[in-house]
Structures are given as structure tokens and as C-alpha cells.
Length: 332
Image 1: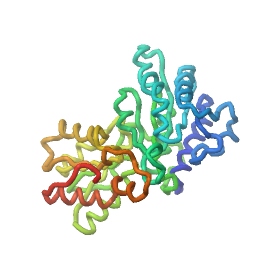
Image 2: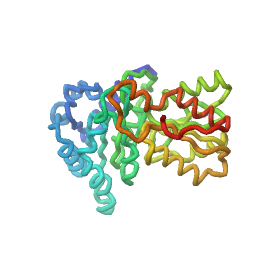
Image 3: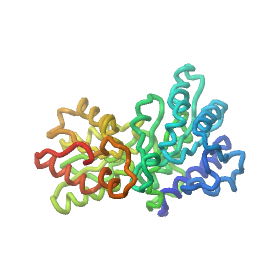
């Protein structure tokens, strides 16, 4: 097992799946030069028939993806920034998510959409959204939010091999994060959460980019307050591993959810509802959320830091919850 950067692990997953199955193709804007690095070198190995630069038209790009999937290919479509999915959303929401149902199972859409999401890089509102709540609501799209290199590779391979459309969201600004990646051919099944740190005092569910600051917060909580936080990384939001979260809450009696999406109708809101419905008897305190306020992501670094969840905000929320005090649910 070697240590690799997250972006290298994603590229390795693509290479391995393209070697394994000649029907796997890569489409996208600037996939040949690969601005983010996850498709670098693919065109040299697989040629321009299987690695295709596309015009800057997300409507065309997502429409071709659906058509290619229906024709028997397994397209991996790189949207660059998650915000760009909005301009190609018709084929994702109205076609990819629905065609298997509307054809009675006669058509499968084994398509994977890759995009980088989230703030923290001072690249302004058009490039910093966290859109997975919108995707979770479609009812026919798997949604993956890996937080580390090993998970990124294993989840991507599962997406490409599967029969359903998937959105694979890369954590923005974390491509250089190092992590151990297994050397063998492995996949991570969708819908299996990971317990990143065991604890007994509070459950913290951290999504994607929020796992790293949450683990830092868990260390601070123990070192400074003696609080043992159990940290859960869902890894996928659709399907969601509700059982693992429920089991943890039944042990700790307290739940905090850390989510980089905006607070209103966030993934944190959905997880809160699930636990309130199925695990209310286990709760000793109200469920709390650490999220982003309902605003566009600022460009100015100081303002961006003010709205994004971080270790200090997570520590403040957890400590106030365990002390019985009130703390804001939103990330302000």
C-alpha cells in the first residue's frame, strides 16, 4: 500500500477501468490537458476516440453522455466545476435520472459525472457551490462524496462499473492530500459509511470536504475537553448508510452534522430528519448542524472563511451541545 495524492488515485481509477473495459470513454472540457490533473495522460494511452475534448457547452456534453450510455458505452464525463452541472442539468435530471424507470428497465444509463465542488479556494460563487442536495433530490442518481485518496479511487471504480448514473464529486482544493491507497484492484460499494474515529460522547457526521476539519475538531475536543467524538464519513449520500449513523447515535445520544452545502434543504437537513424519525428515542439533546449560510460563496478570502465550517466552529457547536447551551445551527 503506497501513499498517493487524491488526484493521482482518481486518475489511477480511470486508467484501470479504461484498460479493463474498452467501452469506458472519457468526455469533458479540457480533459486532454487536464487542468485539475485527474485525466492527465489518458489521451496518450487511449487516443482521441476514447478521450474527447468537448466544446464549452454543458448542454451538449451531458446530452451526449446520456446518448453514449444508451448506445452501450460507459461514459465518464468531466464537468470541471460542480456549478457547471447547472447549465447541463436537463439531461442529468430529466433523462439520466429517469430513463431506466420510464422505459421499464429496458434502458440503463451507466454514466459517471465528475466535478470539483466546494469553497476555500477563493474562486468565487460560480465555481464554489456544493450542489449535492439538489442531486440527492432527483430520485435516480447516485451521489458520491469521497474525502480521501483510497475512497476516491474505490468509489469511482464502483460508479464506472455500475448500471446507474452517478455523480462523483471531488473535494475542491484537496487534490494534493496524501493518503494510503491499496495496490490491488478494489472497489468500495456504494452506501457503506466509514467510521473515521470511534467515540462515545457525540456522533459527528462529516460530509466530503468536511471530514478533515472534523477530525481536527475531534482531536481538539478530546485534548482540551476530554470529549470522545465518533466521526462518521458517509462516503455516499445516495445511497445513504442510515444504519451506521443510527447505530452510532444509539451509542452516543447526540448528533452533529457538518456539511459544506447551504443550510436550507442541505444534506445535513435530510440526515437530521432521518435520525429524528428513526432514532428519536436515542437522542439526549437536539440535533445540530454546522453548515454554510444561505448565501452565495464570497470571493474575498476573509469572507469565504467566515461562512465555511471549520474546526473551531465544530468544536464550539459540540461543546455547547454537550454543555446544554444553545449554539447556532448554521455555519455563522
